[in-house]
Image (cartoon, rainbow, N blue to C red):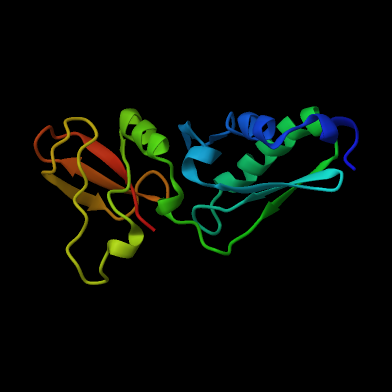
Length: 167
């Protein structure tokens, strides 16, 4: 039977706390918005928090794990464990609709479709400009400010923007 701080913590309260942790590279979205937080499970006197990186080797994951630990040290003492899993691999399908909305409001075009809908040799994705909403866009670079984004430019309003790639 759970005791101490673990007994006082509910899964709902823990999720509420974890929703305050933002991605360090995109501070307007939480780890829940991005789908990085995979599971929160109580086992005996311990909470097990499992996270999945958007890309293997994502440099933000160290910071995210440190933020989770700093928060939970205060709330749970040592009654938790943070685990990282690479399987199944993260997909943009795990992003919340609210997270996609927040990306767009921040100036990053959210993923346009499920990664399973892309074809290997199909036409390149032309995302909607988050500034003027035009679909008249062009890719400048396969990589944007981070590996999970590509750099695009709107031909209509001439503004550059990042596109959060589907995967």
